[in-house]
Image 1 (cartoon, rainbow, N blue to C red):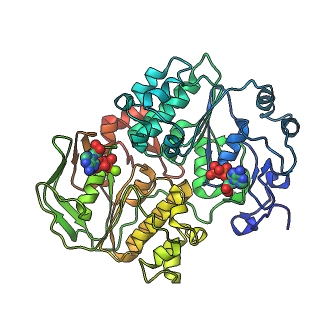
Image 2 (cartoon, rainbow, N blue to C red):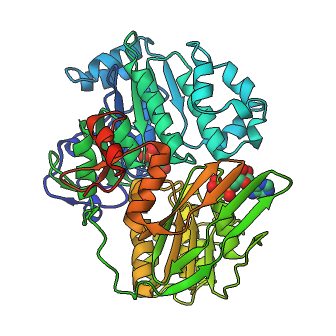
Length: 544
Ligand code: ADP
Ligand code: ADP
Ligand code: MG
């Protein structure tokens, strides 16, 4: 072997045209013999937000731990005591020299938001107030609590609040600290678009504070938010679990565009065989307009005045992908349960007799059973080359087939649940937040799998999601929710994408422009010329 390949030759995964310089050197860290190796480190920059974009298992957290001095890089020499002076020697004369010197002197205070906020209740016993009060080092905690709408859960036990609330509490706890470097390992999981934009704004505000020189390093899989958030971007690529390379910084626009294209120009490296494109959808060949379901106005409420949902009657067409968007707590999952038949409406009737496959938002597949046994119990197609191409490969299931359902990570469980849903022979597929816990690569592949499945099977799909890129790539029409979260919700009837996006984004006061080169949607800076112009015209999303 050439010294790079550990378990597996990377040439299988990536077409290396010219071996990048990083791979000709020793790694910055290797966990052990035949273990993961990381090449390259991101460069935190004072007063700015640096993003990292890449798949899970590629070494992003390892890099973040190294820069936070939680881990001393061993420069590939595992088994001996690593020391920072050797690392400093390696980085002398580079942009990291200064940072590493300060780190060695103990001059760097680090605040870190962990990736998996679900773990927080296992480590902390107490309520939100108790967790947050210990973090108020800058006197900004009250501001953060208000901006992130945490006030209503201040006296609730940490183990009783929702994922979205936990994420916002974790963000407040990190941003309230007085640190030099803030490492945020994903800021958007469980948040709706409005909350995502708020979180991005708060991170930017702290970086831009002129009296201090704080640096922010952010790992993020929501591309629209990453675009809004970061000043520069490192792309991470390689073979998950085997090796990872962190590139030199790129401009955010270029970095995302190259990533989507699947080709890194400076590195002369193809990281994916196909580009991800955002062109207008080609018209489907299925007979449009043929109704699968005609449903009347329906309503549903929980308890006495707790939450009520009103749904405008409408039609779901055969063979379409219907996107469903709206804030958290507005009734989207309730609607999915009504359509799936696991809840009965209070008024109006859903009396269609259809085979429905439903992936709920919170996935419960906890049987002590292997992934392959579970999936083969669902479909006779399991193991056929057809099923492999359509389902297993795009959802990256082959690597986890022999694992037990109970041992899966959040992202693995999500992919198995999507596969289980698509493997059912149904007329209507209902997917509630399929992008949760997935990295960019997995989102795109899951999106492609769902889209292709719908096209090949003339299947009808309803997808709830907060990732605007995923919705844009997937949906033919849009159902938009509005109302007052946790109080009452209202669902519009399915609308054309343009009308639906305009209604949804007008409510959020956010406009998108299109990247000239790739057609990728980008969030406009509030009150920029384009933002004002598009709002005047009432065109919040599709400008073409
Ligand atoms: P990412 O943040 O990009 O998801 P990580 O840095 O967490 O990636 O992990 C990269 C790889 O290193 C993974 O395959 C992971 O299993 C492995 N790894 C992480 N920590 C250790 C460790 N302490 N010992 C051995 N391998 C590890
Ligand atoms: P979304 O999917 O849009 O986030 P949901 O449909 O899950 O919203 O929930 C809408 C509202 O109804 C929330 O305030 C939620 O707390 C409440 N809710 C959901 N399920 C129940 C239930 N079984 N009993 C009482 N309230 C519920
Ligand atoms: Mg929901």
